[in-house]
Amino acid sequence: MRTKRTSFTGHRPIFTGSPSIVQGGFNLDTVSQKFNVDDVIPGGTLAIYDEQSRLVKIIKTAKVMEINVNDTKIVSLHVDEFYEPVFAVGDKVLVNVTGKFTDAPSITKIEKGKGTYVVTLSAAISGLAAENILVEVIAGKTVTPPSGSAYVEADFRGNANAVTLRDYTVGEYETAVDVCADTMQYMLYERRVPPIPVAQKDSTGNFLLANPHVKLSKSF
Image 1 (cartoon, one colour):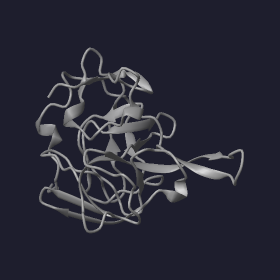
Image 2: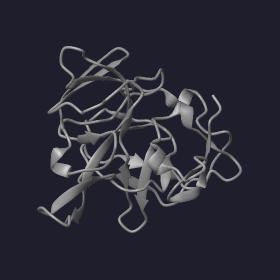
Image 3: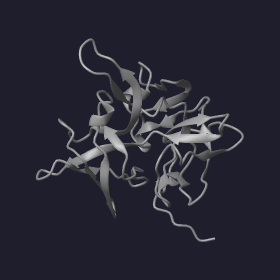
């Protein structure tokens, strides 16, 4: 069977050894999130799995490489030799996941080339700089300040409780996804996978905040 592949993370180890797999099988949640058919979700991507719904949500992240000096709404994102971002048009993104959800800019255009991934935002992000991590945000809780009107906060899609076990190509209908929720005596090479925001780690930076059984290695 012929397949289209644009990511090759599986060709280099992303774990220091063979981690465990959450049994039972899951599908990618394409109702709550947007994905493009044939996008490749890299191995080691932050994920949230639900054993009741059998669905997996993805924490979409990407590192800023460059901001267009003539139009700061145009942002080049880092593309690794083995993976690229998996944003979709319409995704709302921020660096510091705070503030009003309605103020978060959305992605209006994505241009991909060989080794390039450029997004156009609906509005510039103040203070955005190279090496910042862009994160997809969703509507969070409603906040009522002492003075002023109530508003809905921007928030992460959730706290990751797992990582994807390998690369997965988004299908037209369903996409099966396996996740790791316990690296056991091994670790995930976090420098070899999509960027992990500090807010998704515990205070030591060595484990996932929502699941200390996923251990992180800073080795190359």
